[in-house]
Amino acid sequence: MTSARPWLLSAPALVIFAVMLLTPLVMTAVLSFNSFDFYGGIKPTFGFQNYADVLSDSYFYEIFLRTFLIALATTVIAALIGTPQAYFLLRMHPFWRSLMILVVLGPLLISVVVRTLGWAILLGNNGVINDALRSIGLIERPLKMMYTSGGIVLALVHVMVPFMILAVWAALQRQDPATEKAAESLGARPATVFRRIVLPQAMPGILSGSLIVFSLSASAFATPAILGGRRVKVVSTTVYDEFLNTLNWPLGAAIAVILLVSVLAIMVAWNKLVEKRFAGVFE
Amino acid sequence: MTRNSLFAKLFSLIFAIFMLAPLVVVVGVAFTPEGFLEFPPSGISLRWFWAILDNPDFIDAAIMSLQLGVASATIATVICVPAALAIGGGRFAGRDALQALFLSPLTVPTVVLGIAFLRFLSMLGLNGTFGGLVFCHVVIVVPFVLRLVLASVTGLDPSIARAATSLGAGGWTVFRRITLPAIVPGIVGGWVLAFITSFDELTVTVFIVNPATTTLPVKLFSHITQTTDPLVASVSTVAILFTVALMLIVDRLYGLDRLLIGEGSR
Image (cartoon, rainbow over all chains, first blue to last red; front, side, top):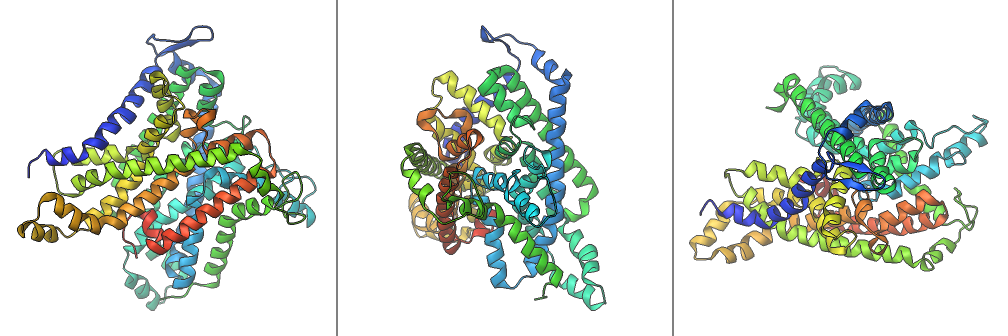
């Protein structure tokens, strides 16, 4: 067996990735240094003007801040719901468990557009939730949930929580069920078992799930575009507008590169932090 | 087996309602006889399902999505099987880098991929073409195929292939008679997951389609952001039924949890 064999086998995929992924990404990075005017279009100049524009403008600053706060809130809520649910899933009767797995994982296979349409119907001023609350007399005027960050977070949790459950579940399956039994036999209450035995063993899953959920939420497009529209803009919808409405591609490319770099930086920092703090957990 | 407490059962029930509620309202709204979105519907009518037939745009978009899904999943599978055999077959210099490259589309924000493909295709003059769309989707779905095929390749027992070789089988025969049959579940699972991912993809696709190559998610998205009539709900309901049927078949054949976790977890 020669050392060229693995490279020959990978060659088709490698060629496609070099042409279709690396080249476009490099071209986008170059594009972000170009300039733009409304009459001449994209000019092949080289400068940091777009980055200076984005980083000095409080309008963009607010959009980036909102995007990361939405992603953070989604991650925390997904972890708070997903961790106990993964644990309960593990302890379910096999029949209910297989049914619940369909409920948890099935939505992953249905387009985010369709799921977000469902949330738009639920959250609207004349939507299902407001109608129900009004008919039982809890509220008089509709609660505003469409076009708010809270509505976006709610729908994003729905999209992201399956990823958290998958990650925590994978971690819990590696644990030894005898540790729980031992704690119970020594008189620990269920809440204590969960907090002292299950939670530490689920931690690697929670941490890796959080990373996935955060990075997917920070770049989510369909949910904020449908539920937030032009009123609650996030980074990805801003990039969309720059490319397809304003047509200022270099500025849009600069915003996208800043998003890419900040998401990668957060991922690397998170991994460093996790490795340092939980070195023992991942032996 | 320890039993779940009442609290755990209640928690799971509320969680299931939360997960299903948006899908239930979409399906419910689709059956309304009225001209606006209402839930629960005031009657049962198939009016908005018949209306799909009067909107060939949606049918064309669905056909486009099917073709795109089949083409990109097939190409991705064909290039991933040899790559997975290489990466899963043993250590070599650059292996980790190669694997990281093939999984990297999962890490890059999809909106960044979208504009990168738009810039690249429009420079080549291929923006909005079916061929351009297919290869962009191949890049997006490769990580899903690679993970599943790799999982079944690393589960292979190398001694069986060695036994075949020692009995005089050539490299191609070993692949066709020994390796391929053993990794078929991973290949099928990977292809299905790739097809579904491509079929549902919006964020990248919205940048690179033109009116002639619009896919179903893009068509639904632009319709929702412009008007709200029950037509989007009836089209979505058909899409949900299609996905549920596919899901049940896959769950029978392969196991949904194995498909989505990417390892033997049962």
